[in-house]
Image (tube, rainbow, N blue to C red; front, side, top):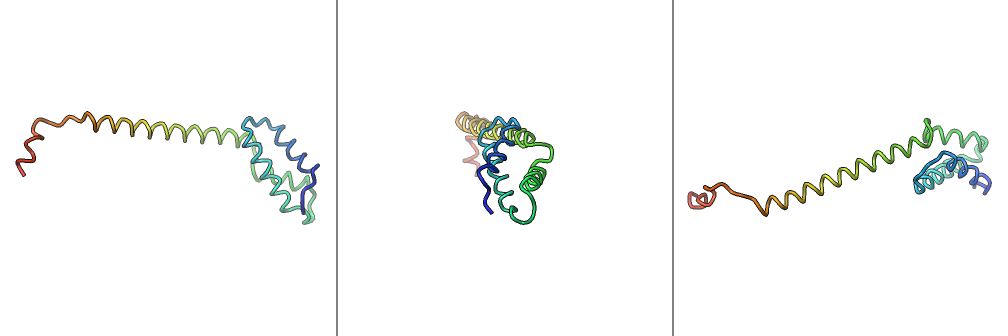
Length: 111
């Protein structure tokens, strides 16, 4: 059974009231909640009960928790990318200026 425009607006208003600052995350959560409620609609439960259950399954401590976790993961990912890029850059510089010990030039003659 398909959600009505009013039901979609109720879900959107609920998500907007949670104070999420990341717009794309807010849209994704709204879409997810609409899909979950829509898939269960028409099976004997009311829209409100289905919405409450979908919210509790998704984020029992509130939707803002998802935003905090998302920001944390993005910071970790950016730190990883920065560290990897810096490491690669330093490796290139070390290879260009690599200093060999004095006996290195004689190694080829010894073998």
